[in-house]
Length: 186
Image 1: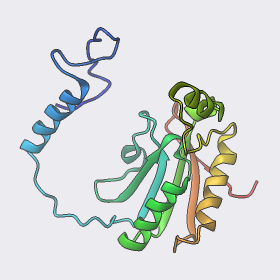
Image 2 (image 1 turned 180 degrees about the vertical axis):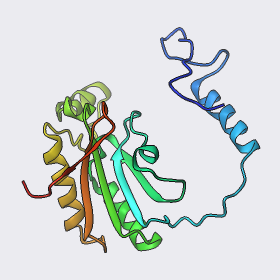
Image 3 (image 1 turned 90 degrees about the horizontal axis):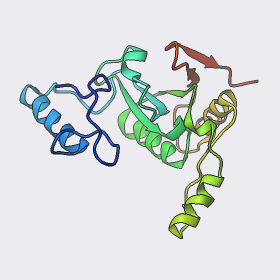
Image 4 (image 1 turned 180 degrees about the horizontal axis):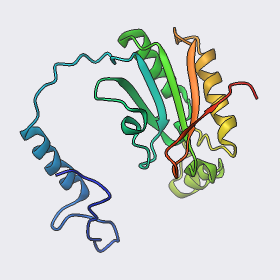
């Protein structure tokens, strides 16, 4: 019983799609029980077979394994809003490289990203609403290519990362499925 957008759920009173008599989380837990009933331990190590870490946006339209021809165990996948290289991404990449053997980094932003329309005003509005200013930056951007370059530079200049020779950045087109490589130099 796969969970997907192709199996729409009926909307609840608040307009959120949920299974009859339960929540979306209930549906996910039920799907996991079905998955686990046929699961066999593949006997894999936590070290990615291809020694690559992929940093990408959390956007639900990006099916990274299919788009990149990857199988379970091939890579570390690190995702956040925008696929932006933040301190926490550097933390994950450092663990990925130093403890788990990755040597390559692939950065993927995408067309139609929500961070293209946000600004740091989002933080101010949030602070006004909840009475506390977030400690994190939104990391919004107006230029996809330039932000990919900035993310590549953040990886290449981090003192914590051992492997910086194979760092490449791309923009994924959500309408064609194609990657477009970004030259680190303008």
